[in-house]
Amino acid sequence: MGKYEEAIPQAKNLIHSLRDIGYSLKTATADIIDNSITAEASKIDIFIDYAEENSSICIVDNGYGMRERELNRAS
Image (cartoon, rainbow, N blue to C red; front, side, top):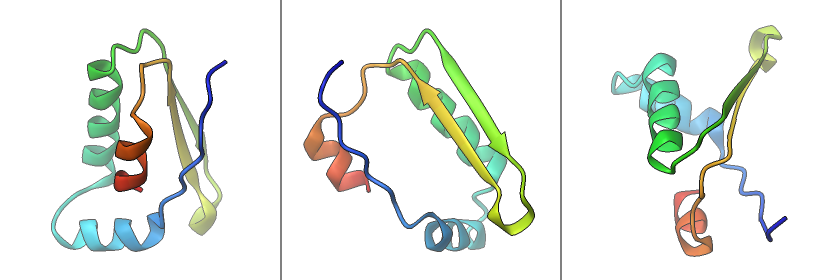
């Protein structure tokens, strides 16, 4: 398996600001899946953990991913 680095964005702040401009969870999820397809993923798994305010969604694919510089800029 190749080298990878976990980059965890401050999701709560970003979600609140995007929601204010009309970016919904539905739209964000569709964008992430579209990115997976663009990255030539042949498998996309979506995991949902519903726990009220501590809920989470994890989207995992086998696409080719981002270069380290792109990943750091996006996080």
